[in-house]
Image 1: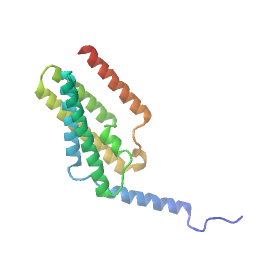
Image 2: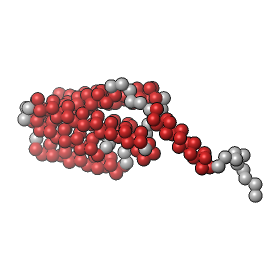
Image 3: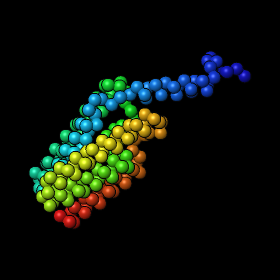
Image 4: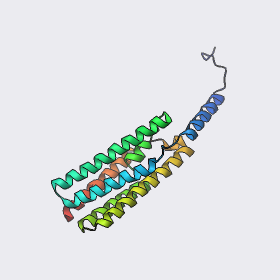
Amino acid sequence: MESLSTDPQDPRTALAGADEARRRLTTSLRLPAGFLVVFAAAVAVQLGTAAYGIAAQTVAGLAVVLAGLAVFLGVAALLLHRFSRVNGVRVDGLASQIVLAAGASASLVYLGALAAGIWAAFESQWWLVAAASVVGGVGCALGARHWWREYRHDPAANSRGVSPRQLAVLAVVACVGFAALLVLG
């Protein structure tokens, strides 16, 4: 029986070439200047406005929460756009890491900073709200930097976005936290 392929190249050679091309592309990718600093600041703003707005428990407080969320989402979209413009590609998983703080350590830092900020806001300890927000922003940026290094080392293993199971766990944690705020507030 005759082969339909007109390429006499060995499949192993083709796969090795594809792996080498992926390695070259991955090592050439760069985060835009100031990417992690701007990301940390956006997270800090979002955490601070969330803490204030939740503690205020007013319509104005809700508006502050939504304004902080809008700032964060706008900055995240800008950062992802800048990344695509600088590198000419999209990286699967980067949006999950940036928008959702999907790494385990980044998620824990974010949730801890949010909880500390909310508590501090209820106690009118505004310096502590600011400190928790900054710690949360820096922690999320460090988590994103860790993911970026892991991605550049092994893009195939780190390119997936957030799994539905992980999203469900985050949603449950958020709902439990919100319910606790309603009961305690």
